[in-house]
Amino acid sequence: MGSLSVAYPIDLHTHSLRSDGALSPGDLVRRAAARAVRVLSLADHDTLAGVAEAVAAGEVLGVRVIPASELNTESEWGDAHVLGYFIDPTDVVLEERLRWLRENRGRRIELMIAKLSQLGYPVSLQRVLEIAQGGALGRPHLAEALLEKGYVRSYDEAFDKILAKDSPAYVARVGLTPLEAVELVRTHAGVPSLAHPGTVVGLEALLPKMVAAGLAGIEAYYGEHSPEMTERCLALARTHHLVPTGGSDFHGRGEHGIDLGAVFVPPETIEMLDSRRTQA
Ligand code: AMP
Ligand code: FE
Ligand code: FE
Ligand code: ZN
Image (tube, rainbow, N blue to C red):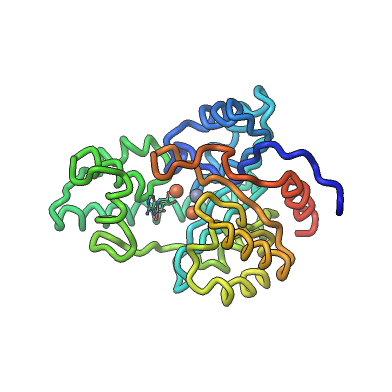
């Protein structure tokens, strides 16, 4: 048996107000520090806008902040989300692509607001923008607006009843395919990992294609994974030579009960992720 490092809380998948999370990047890092998290990745959807604030807070509190972004994709493969680790907030070419993705998010939310109105759930774009506080727009902001209006009794009900993929207010995303997302991260010297693999439709068929495109990790440790699903991901990681990554997917919107640092991630993960940077 090899020597194992002593475990400490690690969280490689979190969101802030810069996308659809509820806390500022600084408050997110402060909450993480209070929960003894030592390595935290801020992975806001389609933006790196919160990274500088998170890194600054982390330096004060002794939390290593790994910059990242979660790229949601649109394809026949279900919800295939790519976490791009170590991408650079000052990379202007990357920022141009992320800005395009955020603009598409905005247009999609406007289309969904129009559909909500037709369905008898009117919410104003202005209110949704206020809720988002300048963050990359997403359905969680619509969920908050619907809850506030009393159309639903909970955030989860907003998704289940109104916003989910098979519900009438849904509008498809215009954006990247899973392979394009992996390539974008690789092109910009990042390390791509497949987020919450359980939401992919056809995981075993998609994974080799993503690996060929440069995928380096798979999110094996995730709050909603059963022990069997974690094992399945670890087996896939061995087969495809992927780093098993993990995190809470904390948004702070009461979306699920998993708090920052609450998902076990072995410390070896950090060394393995770091080592993949140079192999890019
Ligand atoms: P969007 O990027 O606009 O398609 O919204 C996707 C985001 O909505 C995810 O990143 C989650 O934060 C959230 N989400 C998706 N499905 C659900 C659900 N069933 N319950 C709660 N939050 C969800
Ligand atoms: Fe989200
Ligand atoms: Fe996701
Ligand atoms: Zn996420």
